[in-house]
Image (cartoon, rainbow, N blue to C red; front, side):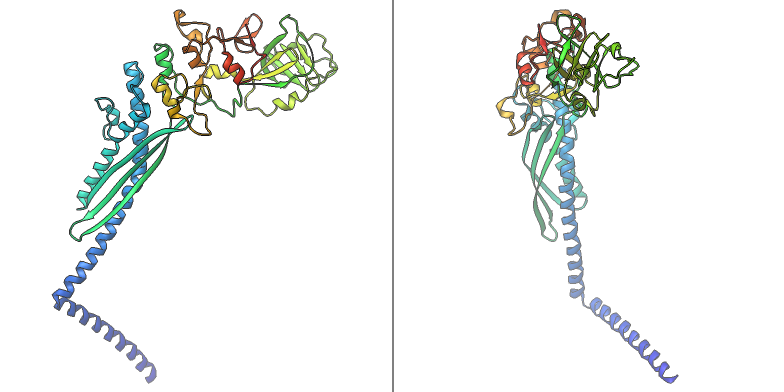
Length: 426
């Protein structure tokens, strides 16, 4: 029992000694003003150093977000000005966007959209924030660059030098920040079409869904025996893979084999079958023996228009792309930046290695006033460049003499580029 008491007393004594030693040390520090001052200065300097470092890192992270906002607004501000004046940008479009991003200035004015939204504004806000924390901030804008990233987006690069200084302790951090932003051009109005059509056509840039429309038109079968009710030997209609389709009259039935006995095959506008020996009784337009045609058309996200032309079977989305006014990549067309300058093709200054950046859309001629309706290609930049075109089966007409997209034509360059020979006619 005595041993336990002694051990407890020993522990208590050690604790007492430690407390007394600590108090003595603190009293010694308080008694020595020089030591106290040095310790306090060291702690303050360490805290200040950390504060400056994290302030700098925070500014760098914020830089990227700010650049993206400035870039998006710069593009929209330039387009707004073009549409307001009804004139293309004077000079290089990419340089005007760079100026708007950095300073907010276009020509001799600052668009309202760019107020408090430039890199200079960001730099001043960081400087002001530093002042609140007794930190001197210096930011130098080194460079700003705008160029095509791909057909539907721009690459915006920015470099700045950044310094943060605490003059009390003589602490300074010097660093640089680089931002690489991708600015999407979708959901922005296309000034090219607006200006060229004198404002009668207004289109928002929306990319054609390549899952829905994987191609413009494609030949999917080139063999078979055929017969047509008309001498032109072609017809077209929306694809149906179901012989019991409840609405068959305007559709083309594509089937492996027409079943024996009573069936609905003769209710369709046309029939394409893989079986060369099917019974054609009652069927006005048909192609039999079209190999692999069902597998070639199965699994599509959206039913195309099928064009039966001689013994050829085509799958076409051109009519749907026209109705949707969507934009597609076009190696012959102007890039987005070229459209801001009023160019009808992609100019050398905007070319991107191993990437096609030209874009285009189909336009509906009948939406223009009569005096502007001409027999030109329905590819937008070709139409406004007054390039003539040819009718396209399954688009201009659904069958000979039956109008579909009235006045729609495609120029020879695109007929060749897209492999449409056989669909074109005069």
